[in-house]
Amino acid sequence: MPKHPKLSLLLTGNELMAGDIVDSNSAMIAQMTQALGCPIFYKATVGDDLDLLSHEITRIAEFSDVLIVNGGLGPTIDDLTAEALANVMGVALEEQPQALQQLERWCESKRISLNAANRKQVILPQGIELIANATGSAPGFSAMVRNCKVICTPGVPSELKHMFRDEILPNLDISKNAQVKRYRLRVFGMGESGIQTLVKKHIANWPTEIELGFRASLPMLEVKLQAQNKSDYPALEQCLAQVKGLLGDHIVTEDHRVISAVVKDLLIEKQQTITFAESCTGGLIAANLTEIAGASAVFEAGFVTYSNAMKQALVNVSDASLRQHGAVSEPVVREMLSGALLKTNANIGVAVSGVAGPSGGSNEKPVGTVWIAWGTATHAKAHCFYFPVDRKRFQILVAAVAFDLVRRELLGINEQAIYFKERTFKPRH
Image (cartoon, rainbow, N blue to C red; front, side):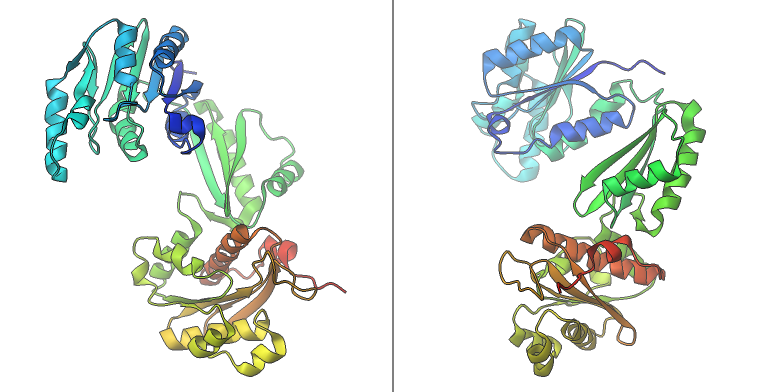
């Protein structure tokens, strides 16, 4: 196994300490380095305190080969990273001409004037090496502290991503001999414990050298298989094939697409268009689709019919169905679907009506009940599901089920997903 550097991470900012912002940067860095077989060795977070930041840089550099310092490069008085590193190095701060030129170009591109606050970002420790920032105003920089390479990076996530991927990682010498191989399966409709149980039951002799991991990200679950050495690749491929066989059509994708993007791509591939008639989700299903670039190729209109009156006016639900069965019922969602398809001339659609809660339920239709209809004008299906969770999770899950039902319909999958068995509504007797 190739030896990789001991890579540590130091984040700085009062906002992080107070919980005002969520630390996504360390996760981004860890994912990029982990993919190359070089996990983060140590991580710490400190507030905007010059003495403490200087102390932590000195301390962590003692046991690290590389230290990534993230944050504190901006134009305000609480951005202290440059001053802290100068203290640790025992050098003065000075204006860096090359960094100033980059800042002037950035200001010109944004059509803003270069002011004293922005100019603070190019006052850096003597003897540092600049790191280009292609998307922001503050340059990164690095220097050796004892035997540790200290790399200072911006806190803005989009700037960090480009800088770390394009400028820092290629120069860390951790990718040349990387042997880590990983597969990611994005699954919908099966939980972590259920998958783990399946694996234990059907793959009795799981090889210890193959890592099986899970990452829950509502509404999908990511299943990860990983090998650290080339000699383990055959075992990894065998495990992958076995896991795929167990999960079957619950695997939505093997890339990073969300389920709505998978459905959008399938619709384009099959030259189909889609529409939605939504009640309890309040437009979330359409929003999930239209946040994906290229959605206009498959989606022209949807309907948010929250009230009974709008169900009648917009998607032709009959007064008789509403009176006899109520808004949360099979006849109503079927009529919602039929009306939406008729008005948009879409090829396929979904209609949903449910009780999102926390109030409004009954013994016959408790909070968490939802009727979903999906299909075409000539071939529609409907089913009643039960998701007894909080309102937000309920809406997220209903929207995801809607997309999964369409995905299965477009792929011609006749076998029902596990959630039909686990989440079908069973009336109380």
